[in-house]
Length: 321
Image 1: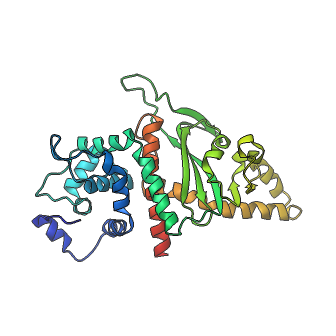
Image 2: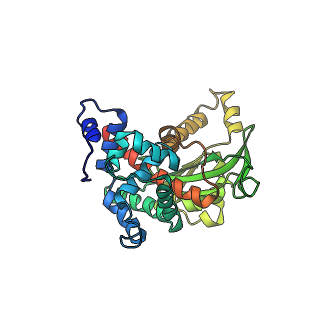
Image 3: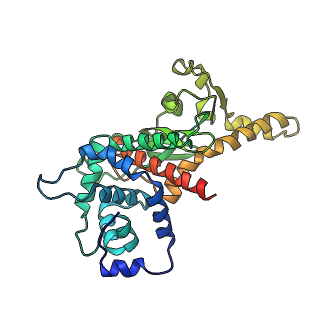
């Protein structure tokens, strides 16, 4: 991105040592197919001549990505653009020019939500990965993750988010939503996902997580009986579902006698482990541990961008490895 640097930004840019943040942003700048993603948004983006001149689409898209990578609210993102030179340079901004305020940043997010553009961006990234030969559709791994939502009733409605729900996992109760994902077995890249309330049965979403070209499907015990479901009977893939925890525990009591079935379960678990990569990236690397917005639609939009960026981050990891 060509832009005029202020004296302070020029001085920062010429220093010798690069921070980890700068290195990461530099890799993302080169790796992300910016023009393809911008072409998804461009038809809906405000044009010059209708009121105040809008900021360049490339700038707003980069700011939106920064928000996801560093888990920032709109006001926090505005502050970061003033305080952190590496973020400002990544977005193509300078202290000598105008910096988008938190309302402008929020309006861009609402634009993506209003026209379902986040999902289209996720799909565009998937097409790009497929064309590059990275996304190999031989097998799918299925899993789901509970994402907690604030239970506060301090809002206009005076109640908790009606689209969220509570559920019990083990001995712990959770209130929030659930992200269901279908992951490429070889690379650990997410090729499909759905967003539901936390009490949704994992098995109910299985049909929406398959692309139809699978030779095999691995999933945990929450998907037992999937191959018998009417909507999944046409799937010709080989289903490999983990045994329920209580049965595995019983097998471990007599490891010598149950050596073969235990080995089979360990093998299933080792293959299924890659399904945790997208969750690890968005939770541990991007810091998305709790939903910030109310309603499933807004959170689905955020997850679409997160999974798209997690796929790109995963590709970056594979390239550096």
